[in-house]
Length: 429
Length: 184
Image 1 (cartoon, rainbow over the protein chains, first blue to last red):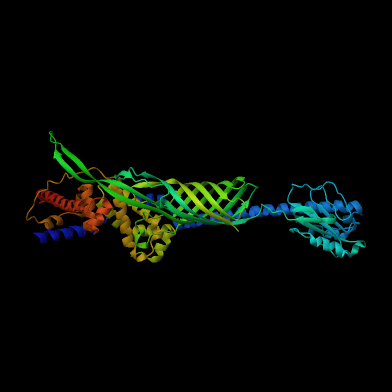
Image 2: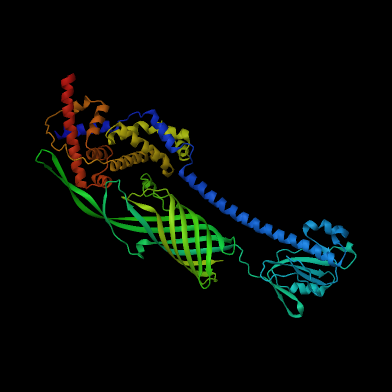
């Protein structure tokens, strides 16, 4: 009998295993419609997003650079005009007399004549005041960056030496020493973009570069983070979550780490745009009790109906939710105050690609298989000390995940927003 | 003709033709599997669509093209199990008062049935029984694995399998008798 049953079972199973059926043709159309045949695959989409973000960063950076370069040229052009007006003050109109000056005008080389062996001037000047050794024009102490024009008597070595004593950062330098056609005392015009101007002994002008805030800086940040993901039980899976154990606020079960390497560029004195790479690892262990039907008691009611009473059992379970991502970020920060503490608020987007891929043997499970994330972040950052390169950081961050390409194999969802508390250091190179 | 590595690589970059070829290659088997795991054709079609959507969305994870059959099968079974969890009906053991048949020639009865009739029999099993029966008998999972997949204990899995077999035989017998009476 047993052998007979086994034979029957084997035949039945074989027929079931080999059972196949032709699906309706419309099913393919529906599948193709939902999959989107022309759509890029997940990896392609991810790559394209990364490239778009990188291109975005490069474009923004390039525009900022061009904007800055353009303003530099404008300043230099303004200076050129000043030189012309200055030259007409004491000599004949150089531009009309000298073909060289015309020819070299695009190169911003000007040759002018005058009595002063050395002349210094600033841009944005309305009036010209000529002293024995220097000319300072309507200098505004707070305006920056300053631009200085040094006019040096070509034949006077000592004056050149004086000029060389000027300690300034030079953005542009224009000299013309070949103006022999002029037939008079020649002066070489040097234009210098400089910072602070100080008077030194004997009326000599010393220019010190004022530290500029508007330059690119590279930063590196490393911060342990505590994750506070919100968890919501899945109400459609027929699994009853009896309770979720509370994890203490600073438990290691919440601990992760975040490292950033990037550049920041000031748009204004207070607003900076930043972008770069992010390594992000966040973990949260969820311990919960699941209520399961252990067995059912079936009895017959007085009217012949069947009464089914489920008996429950409680099972302790644990689920570890971990992100280990590499990504790029782009954002803006606003400086609230800069005293002993540097306080900023910031916001930005991050595109992450998961590093913790499943083994190929598990790949077909397609659950717990995070692959790509887009985060929106809002943070408040306290840094100390405000002016040092190495700063301690305290940073609560709220993040919202626009897009999470994964499924958790768990009877609950991790809500797409979370709170992170970052404690660490930043270093500005 | 089996799928080539190139076809699968093209599927990974969402080539429509390659996707169609993969679909064509697997569609009948997958539909057969869907019919076994669900109550009716309508449900089977829902699962079938879900399987192929997941396949195309996750095919980039397929590293070893030689294992595409196993990979497809696992996705299909997982999707069917997920569907079962989502649509689990509160059915209980209404079939527990099984008949005892002795010396019945089930093989003979089985031989009288078409595949379609057989599938209909499987469809009529209570959801839990059908899942355990398919997973254990047809797919070859053990009771521990089934317990994990269906969130039931191993003991429950075993008892549901026994009951499923019993019910199946009972139904076969009853249908067989009817058949004989009608056509015999």
